[in-house]
Image (tube, rainbow, N blue to C red; front, top):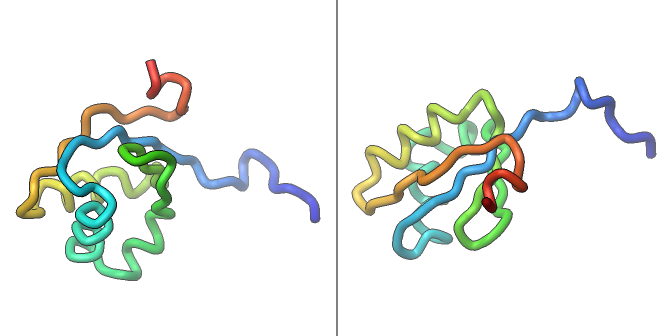
Length: 87
């Protein structure tokens, strides 16, 4: 199967998060904030225990979901590459 051109791929942003019980709370916050269809549009995926990847266009929506969620979830850093996020 032929790979996609770089212009056709989704542009990702990586978020470094801080909070308690992130695996359960992050998914629940996004589902409660923008729903199942909105979560599918974000392209949400886990990279590490405290790093998630989302589409560039849905960054503001995901940050808003974390702001209105009762449990505290902080976004420490947003980066376009994992290399800069790890520094």
